[in-house]
Image (cartoon, rainbow, N blue to C red; front, side):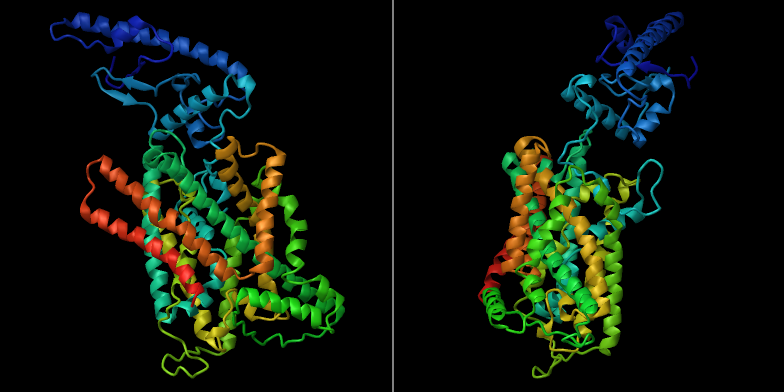
Length: 603
């Protein structure tokens, strides 16, 4: 047998002959003759061939019970194609309990497949065993419900290969697209709350800090996935901290999703109200009460006083039309929105809505263009850092800077789904670089939109609204287009948020993401009720975002990644005092950020 010829080496697992196993493992003694060595190698080759014929027979029998020929991995995946499309000698039955290996005549053992294929082998066996016989279940190859599929978050760009893998370009823009959300609309107001210079410092500093903790999440997940399992960060917390660690991670991830859904509902109510008012005014021929090119000063009041003021206005305004009474931004529109959203959130699968993922990128691009056009129309920069009596006075620092840090804790939050995005990366060794580039792009986008709109805003800086579109009247055509665009995007993304919330909530409780239509309908009713109550009584997205971001960031951004990393180092006997001090300070920053949000209520 030449040096390039190989014979299968079967381990002590699965269907095998005991004598053949001993012969495979017995080395050639130093005193054996050359004829004895040839005879021994011949016996090994004969035994291996006999075992391989038996495996082929098992494979043929199993193939009759399973439709399709791709039995080596997930149907249609790159791993399955590699095995199924290769030499038939390398195909193994589903219950084959070890990774195929080969031995050369010089005694070297070589693996026939890579680690990813081996992981798919083991994962297929695991879920096949759980499901029982193939005739009892049709979801044998399903991954766990709580592991988010990458297609929920990936941006469909023409850069994917035929095997479903994604390169660095799609990875970067998927991360950027996922983080770009409602926080962008609040950036000018948040910078005004923090002060111009302090705002820029926080935008850069929080980006670096959240990037580091996000990288720690990716590293911990990759280490646990090296055994062939598909896991999320909540599984990592369970491995190191026990059940309470897993439930803590799930609780705070649900809080982030809940906060995002509340903000989406407030904005959808806002955009629907403004869009329908614009259309009704043009169809009915009602002249605009405000100049379409004018700006609105939105100085925030106490939410309770503002709500009671709206009630009194509705009761005392005799000039109010029937349309105004029926179509109220805070009283009726949030309820009308239920008629549109309720049928969408009850879908069992959100696959249809993932087709609109690219709308996030388009809406952000349009918003950037909108801000640039408005900045040009504002007539340059309006900043005065010295004269506090000036209309254009801009403070460099402000004691309300925790407002921005709370918003950025949610604006830079992607820790919950980063593993799903990176799981289909062609070159996983570039994950750190791609994450860094994505965070730089996110920070640059936040800074550009926030700083440009803030610096060019011609009115008093206190007039900035926590939703920059609220500074424009209904009759502004560009603002109407932006609202309509964002409304359609949020209507398609809201069911995805509900779906992710559902699998994160119901799967740990009932062992299934869709236990029954009663469970799903009840959960959806609770979520929409909470969202409607906020849209009616507290329609201030800036306040909602900063509290939600500070709360979920306390655990998922600042605490859990650092604690898990220190426990990993402790197990490896590499934990040092400088590492403990640095990561304890990061945890302390998260606690201080959350506590500061309540302090601001008293200022």
